[in-house]
Image (cartoon, rainbow, N blue to C red; front, side, top):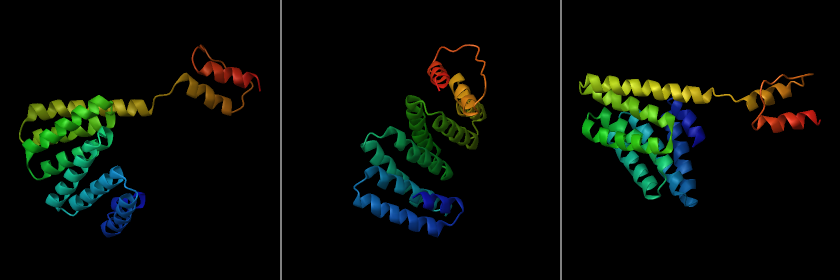
Length: 193
């Protein structure tokens, strides 16, 4: 499936589909419901790129049902978001909002900032396309806030990270203003060697 994703990103959809079919066969043989469901998401993505929105919708619905039946909330987010966006593309806004609000609720439960950012972004697009400018603006602001949270968490560095990285440079001395957490163990281990 990984090679299929690369082919899909390069818009080599026939090649991507071949790899996804191989992955689907392997997942069916392994009796991996999650793997099969994720293949359905990939199929839906390809159909959507080919502007076959109804076929894409069917694939996303299958994937969402399989993952929700297995109580796999984290992986169910992807087909739910894809389904919400697909329905938006079909101008079925009320249905789209239903799936997007479900996605938003699950993403909040799981504290998934990336999925929260994506859900609020698509919800904002729905409201904008419906002419609900105030609601669209409100969701765009939330999207920006979640995006900032994602970027902040990716750039988050602890004193321990800094101590470990500085120790890799084999310095003669390190000056640390305060050492009370896990970095204290790293400092002690370094001093003993």
